[in-house]
Image (cartoon, rainbow, N blue to C red; front, side, top):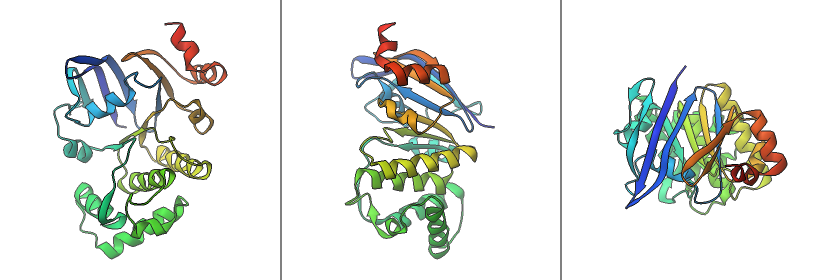
Length: 246
């Protein structure tokens, strides 16, 4: 079992501290949901964790299986088993999804699999997840809807098999059918051992999964964490009721 320990992280942008002493402990196969209003610091955490130069971690530690990964480059963190699905996915013109994922797979897995064999593997995985295999020959995120982009991200997850996946607003701008496929895939990957950290401000995400832990942020700090009991309170009253108590 793998453990990712994010301890007392504080993040600064320019002269402002936007995240203050935030801690999470993620274990294999767990699902953590981070909620809170816009501007509370949710996305800042993952931007800082994965090395966005606009966000500087000024305090705290990040260890994976006891190994300090805080100062590692984004690429090295990916090699260690971390995955990030950003809120706004970039388009990569001229590069097909198959070509992109083949390069990533060969690099991360130290594999010499051929493009033809990899395509067969990717096609099989897409069918298992009920994802249109037509995406495999499309340019990465070019001309895709929000839901289609998120489905291709889920396919990346399934083929790369990270230890921990951070998904920022995975449910934003996604149609009902695509959302069902996204969370079905998350459920399958969770059972296979991937740990998930899902960021959202929509209570509806709780209709699709039962997280192990729910965390609520306000003004850069985690104001409450809990499990199913917190889920019930959020569903019935919204997280604003929780924030009002703090």
